[in-house]
Length: 419
Image 1 (cartoon, rainbow, N blue to C red):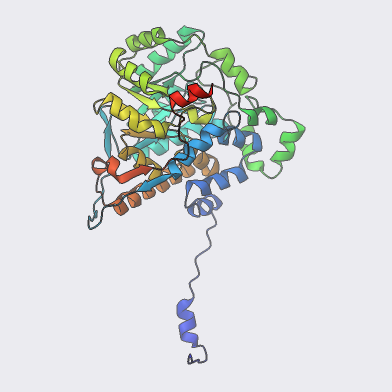
Image 2 (cartoon, rainbow, N blue to C red):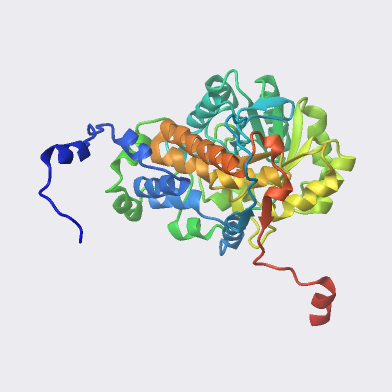
């Protein structure tokens, strides 16, 4: 029998611990966010449906995005035992410069749509964290203003090849003059993907006030106050505005983009050159061998272009083996946890990029939300490395990771027989 007694008031008081209420609502929300998924939940609650769905959604059935995220979940780690890692080094050297963490902020279009601080918040947070920031051709902040927000850090520029080539050439020269050190030549957007959430929401740039958007705005007045009391939402580098995202992309992009365009840009751009949107081993090898680029970004555009596209994380080990160790390989799409980044580095990625994870933080709390995104990922990276028994990124190896397989390709011979 358990011996019972009357409660001792002194012992009860020892158990009582009351925190001082946090009056700053943004700080309170962000401190309660322990994962990127938590930030997404806050972002969804605070952002109008059309803007949130533009960020959160992907093309057609959204299979590419779902598969990319599933691929990271289907990772089995193999920790080493009795390998203490009291001092961690999460820094790396990428494309001739340093980064305090093995990830940077990916290029995102229409960023001030999600929250009015937009790219300024991203660039400022990247500067504080010591990681690269990438500005999109379809950004809503100018090249020069991003440089001002991150004057001493690393700024990268993502380039689309436009129908009017002189626009692309001019942006390339402006980025170089502003001191951006890396250009991402993007190849997976000859036409716009079918982003069905946007179509169903009647989403356009800039957002239009309709009965539906007004009703949706009622519980989110802060977003509309920001939107209506800050400079007009428009492209910082392009003059074309008005219409659905698909219409804008199809009007601006050129489906005839080719290796000739890559050669021209290589001749204009003085810094490091990446090709973003590579989805086959063969293309990665060809780029390394014949076109003088410094690296590739394995990406299916966050699942926003070709649905059922290859999973970049699955492609990573094959590409690394094919191109060797001296060619830069980055990966994006589906990264929602620091463990995803650790697994990518272990399987051969030199670097990774985050897109939606950054935007969820932005929508959840502006600049402070982006800082929180980086802090969450940093904590997850450090914890995963310690649990694996490694002290630096250089110690991560393929032996630390197994990619569990749900989708097994049909053998070519069998596929031919079926046809």
